[in-house]
Length: 483
Image (cartoon, rainbow, N blue to C red):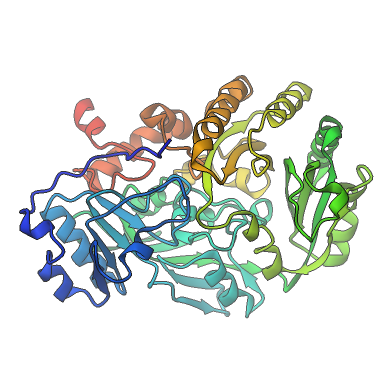
């Protein structure tokens, strides 16, 4: 099974201009570089993190500036090229590449600048979480981001952004103050509270539909340098008992605690005792966004729910917390993830989660329960496009495997799991874990609810011809149909 291409390129370029000598005008304009099939570096540049995604773009524009991005957008629009945008390059769905079209690669644009007096952080659209964390932690600050440091900040933020600080300081998109955006028309705009505020609203969780963000401005918060972190593996043969106890902990947890429970199998690695290799586990992991001493007291129940298989908990540099899961998601492995917001974690939900975990076809796969709420739920629903803000839990079903011959069974397991959990959800999904976005408009409507029509109108305003369609797409044609 190969990840489906979500659209087919329509090229108006001549056969000659589709050759390796094409696009001399764009190449001369770029401060960065333009790669084509056969060029040195093309093969490396075309590969993306998810090994399921194997695309061959006609051009890869390695952009070094906003001017480069404008030139590449204009070229794609004028030549009717399918356009993909790659930020940090960690998209599970593979949105950052395409067959036969143009990839705008923002990776060289990863500069991060911090104002320690105000806590404002300006970061390029190609920055990763690691880039952001290194710069902000130098001042004892952090921007709420995800839990794998190699993730790009762009796609994460535009889709919401949930991480170790979410219940204390909100989603990544909640901390987005402003953005520099290149529109489908090749214009450079600022989206902020005072300029193009409707665009800022859409960028806060509405995906990459409305333009290419070349620079983000975030609000950072005091965090670290050390935090109390729990990372305890409990016996997965007792998963129902452990998950019920986790539910009870979450019910009383203060906003300083951001945690999740992960069901999986202990990897056969030196970090874990050989006696428990391949044994099922329930990982209870939590970060306390306050004093280490208070965090020890508050988080201790997660360690003592039962006799642990292994316990790596303790005070830890925040930078280490941000990288602790990196090795579990190596580049080139095969990934297929989907999600659902859960209305509760009652016993029937726990039993259903345990059952689908029992059916995992790959020992590398996991079933994750993220505790939401806190600061996320206190942001008014109308303040951003993000959907699912009031759900108490998020279910993530992650298929992770190595061999292509196992694609079908792993993808089928995730889809069957999500179908089985629908009765416990309002139907909304976290769109950074979208599978291959098979649900299309139906999923978008259920996730965004009353915000969806406003997103369609904004899409029609900023990208009326859907140039930016390789994403969790909002189709501007719906605006025309309704008119």
